[in-house]
Image (cartoon, rainbow, N blue to C red; front, side, top):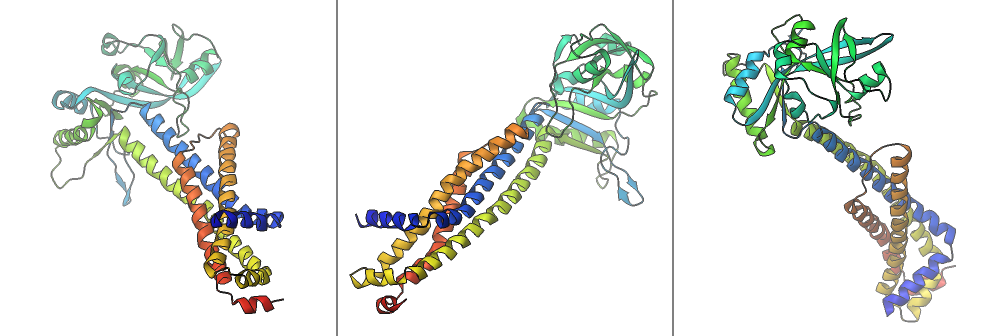
Length: 407
């Protein structure tokens, strides 16, 4: 019953100075709202990255050529041609942990149809490429093994290429276009996928038989751009990567002391890399937003110290009629917690509204989790207790006689 009375007294004391109480809460409100909004944006980005990576095939394994040194500087993966079709054939024959394998060559090309032209890139690969990269055909059909063997001038195009060459809403299947002045017939249209998290248009692509691109657009170079494979399941991806690495080292006759002249990556690796970056950025943004919570806590301490000074005579009267130091301590602690509690509630609402605003008008993916709300709310309560303790302790330690004499 005593606690209930103290809560009523605290509410009455705070209501006497409504504007001052609200301004004291403002730091907590902004802090909690900022933390929730930043965590929602970070979590939305993380989930969006995972979804984008998963859309490319969760079992996919990519093998790229190695790097080269130029002037003592390592140029990075893909800067040195080391992969060949025989490497892809060796993986197919010897690696039991993968089900699909295809060599691939990639080149930037100019696509022309009459007065329309478009700059894009073409991927030459075997028919397994579509399954490995989780690509579906919405119209027409894929090329066949016979097309690949005959280096047939057929292709499958993405929706972006179709819209820019043949016009929006037009069916491109059966139409002809020229790729670097070589005529091709469109036999299929890829299902629309849109942009991924990294801003890349997944529909701005042309896929053609491997031998067609290799012989007609790549001057029959013996080297290839990459190798794509699909593991039998997600559980064996790491083992498959190790096995592929062993096979390629043997193929390239590398000694135990030689570095790999290739790079093996999986979709999980890419997801983990970008997931880690997203997590670090989320923590950084939330930490910056959390500073306003500390500022709000300092505001609570400041106002509570002012309140103790203003109510010194009131404290003396209470002690004179029987109130103990702990009663005064609890009284002021309740006021500090009340400010942080109510500020936290309003801050949660502000954070959810801000996150919704960012999602609606900014087009940014946001995900508000219960853990972020509980974390922000708990932190705001802790700030109120921490910064309210000193003023409450100071009030409780006042000498009743000195307090009564205070003017």
